[in-house]
Length: 175
Image (cartoon, rainbow, N blue to C red; front, side, top):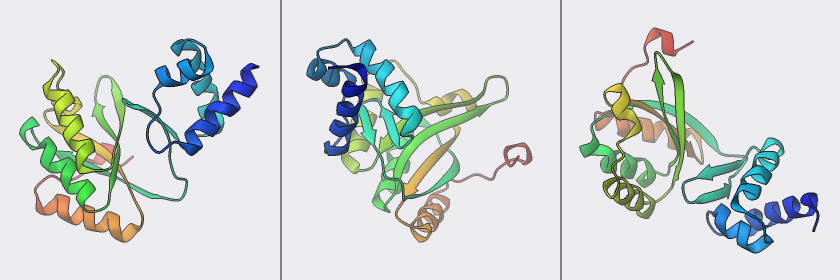
């Protein structure tokens, strides 16, 4: 199998997958190293930007969804509540990011779309020595949320505001 054939086969596998496909699984399927798969994915993603890299593997996302970024603030004790609220009202938490004055924008893919995803994320966090990305900025962070319509995003925004999660953008964040 040539490199191009393998890359086409990887893309086909992602198109037919029911969930995230780990690089390790792809490496076993195609008889190459995980590092080769990671390199292949970098090339594939250049032409297929809807491929998302998550901590559970690669996902081929939808092209026609609506997205909105929300600026929020909370401590570690409310992470489960925040994520659950978003998925319960029809959102998918695509990523988390912070805006650090010295380092700039730092983002991490999440792809959380269900209560089970929330539970697994919180369990991974509790089972590690890691902290939330937002802890670097005193709890301030952003979530890129995907939903089926602008109305659904409006509802999520309303619920985040009612729960006290939303915070206003600062003038320098609007640029």
